[in-house]
Image (cartoon, rainbow, N blue to C red; front, side):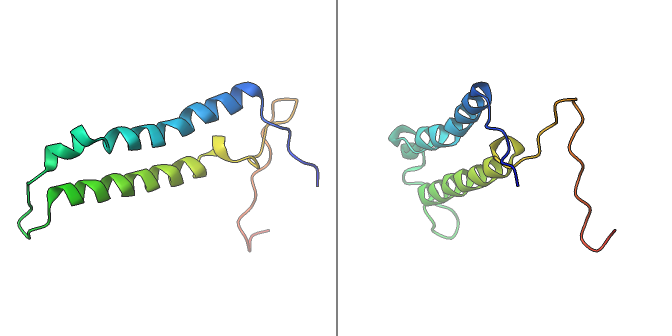
Length: 97
């Protein structure tokens, strides 16, 4: 099976730019000035709001990493259009011929 063509420099640059955003916002959201906004505040069940904020940011970073990895731009094996500009045929669902 032939290997797909390597992504161009521009495509790799775009990928790196977008992939930089999740860790950047993660670091930004976890800086002490933002964390200190929730210091001492508690929810009705006694859970510190700071803990809820930390776990929410953590889950959002994981979800953003998953969404970025599933995005077509980040998959090396994504079907590319051929030289004539026609898209590659879509695979049929299993069990249907």
